[in-house]
Length: 353
Image (cartoon, rainbow, N blue to C red):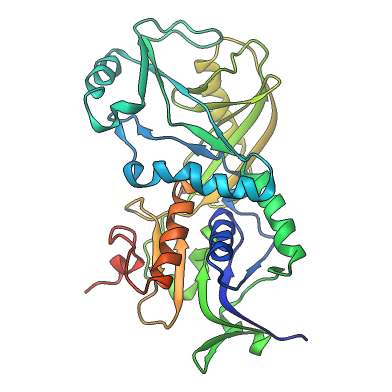
């Protein structure tokens, strides 16, 4: 068996692992990605949305000031490399009740007001239920996650940078300031765990209060429903073109598997029937498990008590938003030799005291 040496071993090839790999390539750092392709993650079934606002109480989403301005540049570099478009900016329209209409107007003077656009005290929109009103906002969009992973994975495999295998804890050992996988088949200075929800079984990360949740979404055909915007009510409805839409999503912690459920589909269809005034036909139903923690912030950085072991995980349903920023922070923390990861994201926050 051929033995290889690299600087960084990335465990897991979802959105976080793929973006870290490309950021390392940009930084001139050698790496290998090892991932079990038989185990689907949340990235493969993700809605892929970017949303700068939160609606339970209208405000900016966490991290918007730091992250949102960098997204075009980060994904733009990848689109230039592959000569394909993956990121699509598309305004959203949120159906509003009377209280939300007032909050929207007041929000114009706040830091997130730059995203708030047209406001109508008339909720009549083609194909959608009546509401007290609706508000249009910018800064939203989506990433073609599955096509990105497929195209990126093919390129990494062609360069022998992506290995289809499962990394078991017992297959890792430490010797002479290096990590050895399978007795030295692969030697690396650093390990980064980007395993998604599979991190629950990682013995080195049991001190992190993971709170994974299952998400389900539907793709459906609905002639007569406008495709101009991402529609938001209790669900998001994302136009995909040619009368096809994606809608979601559920958040369930009781059953953590990637199997689409009857109850999940029923819940989504009931809310679609409430939201839409046109008929629809479901053509696909998908499920995945999102990696998250109780404070709903990413988990990034060096694992306390271990030499050169790192984590890049915990982004929940906001991986498209957080992953480029967090991957960049991690690489810069190595290259500049300084801590540049905010304390609110550092994995060390769960190991203090």
